[in-house]
Image (tube, rainbow, N blue to C red; front, side):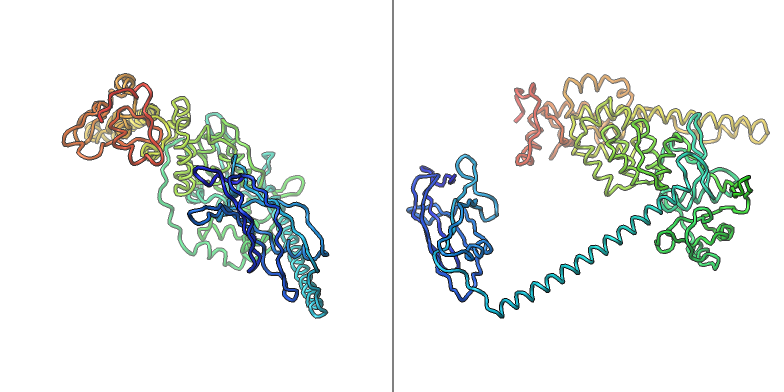
Length: 621
């Protein structure tokens, strides 16, 4: 039933061909029907001395008078099904079975009414049973089955062994996490034998966290340079990282080969069971073996002397009333400024094996600052998995661009472009993109042809970003000028230098909105902004008027040149081949010339829309 239409002036003339090995039978042709009924039986002769070794094929054709018959589809009855049928006595018949015809690519044939083309059939045994096996054949079959049982028992034992191994590994991992948690309790009590005091402060909030640089070193690769900086200060000053300051990744520190090896190879650092009350390393430091380490207990001084990472002073302890030793030395110190202690504590607790932290929406920006500064890709992924990309997409991408540009950064940039109408909208961009996007990040974003938003949205985002960056740069410059002024007054009071020296010193160039915004406003594709907004909201914007958005080659204002293009006018000598602006994925066209220049190349996939009210304009072509 449900034959497809095969003839231009008719329906279908179907017949079937039934094949088993070298034997083939065909039904009669049913003309002009979508639901033929044959009710024909075919008897296949089988060799009782040779087992059946092939399936039965049923092929559907459309009969044609003047040309070769056209194949519609085919299905087959599996060999195992035929063998099961042959085990029955003569006269046996199966129930009516249904099979769908398939194309050669495996897809079902769809016929009249877009329904699957199917065939109903029955199997039967005319005479005799399948050949009985001889005694030798039965013995061989029994032997084969016994071998198969042995194989299955062996495979089952391997599965049980693997299951037991995984259970042991899980128990070790559980012990590992429990041991780490002892070192950094969630109730804010002090753990044992810390060697790094992490001071976290923001405005009036401040907290000291006693951590272990070996754990931070192992789990946060991006933190290693700062740990070394904190160590190298030798407690003379406190190493401070301001997370609110603009950050650009620098070159990694050059590490002296052999320092750590000399310390580890010392005889005092022999392998032993890890004990959180005495060890100054993390479990698993012996070739990754859980609950074993080689810290050597008393080798902290040796490690410090040879340039190792751990400066733990175990000799500065006192005994409490309960008889336990409590560490008094703070080791060395490291200050984080610009984020709340509660946010940093959540991140550190995760490093010490506590459950995944849940970050609230007002904490996400601070978490991004931490992940960006210390290259914590796993922390960015954690924020993304908690569904914060919609509210903080630009900030997350900016951090990913620094942490993992080729992988994570590329994926999130694609998602950012796909939903640019939301992420670059002014209300959203004010809190997300404008405060966080760097100069390089904004440049990369403006180069994207895949931005799925109108160009006026891009323009408004650029203006908001430039305005916020101008205010930040101006405030920073004023702070520097005030500091220089105080320094000059101090030198004058001490009689070190006079005002003549200050007059000769090079003056810092004054920050202006134009110096901040010009390069980025040139990347806006003005011909795709609505003409009334181009001549109104854009040209009459007071901040935009402070910028000098000129064509670098001709010196013509880019807005004016965009108006010429929208009117279909070319600039002789400037626009000899292709026009200078290319539409983005979300661009609207405002003139037929743009359709003519860019439409043909995209006709097979898409066509940029022309806004309705401009559709009736007499296009230049």
